[in-house]
Length: 286
Image (cartoon, rainbow, N blue to C red):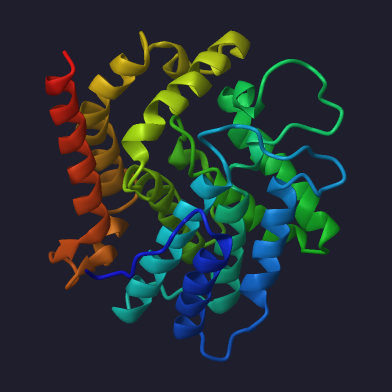
């Protein structure tokens, strides 16, 4: 196995793995940085930000963010080892970690949100809300406007209907980080051991989102039930996610292959195993 098993329900375990990847890339890096930004994220998702409640979306929870963060750190560390161009400078890599830790903060409800529903009601607008959250938090942390813009550009690479051609990346390295974030967001969740068990929870989020949808997207309301979502998932993987990874995100997932670029890919193998489990389960439960 190329990567060690990391319990993604444990922020401390994920933090240690991400920190190891960061220091492998940048041995002279700030040894307090990863712990610092993980602390910010934990505070926000736990409801310790003055303006936001704790996360209550059950699929897009903090573990979901940790799964993506772990995958992104691994991908970029592996890419760095190949000396691929453009090289990612330390500061931009740090902004990339911040971006993925904040990319789903759009599911957080504001402190004064007393209306019914969980943060899943913001599914259709969660990317825009994540951009707003990142701007507020990083302004509070005294980041420059340029750094905040970089983080926001990376976050814009997420979302089912992201139009990458409209993102005004500052440079080629920033684009790589945005594509790495989008790649890791998809791979991290779909490779999870409990991905199949959480699909009904994802369907519940879609159902709630559909009740609050204001025409932003039809995707969230097109499923006929949790079983329908499960039935469509292997096709979603084959016909949407894989082409997106290869084309839109420039095949960055190949840096996770050992050896690069055509060796075994831990994340793709885990996802293919999940797709097989789904098909087998549907056969057993007609």
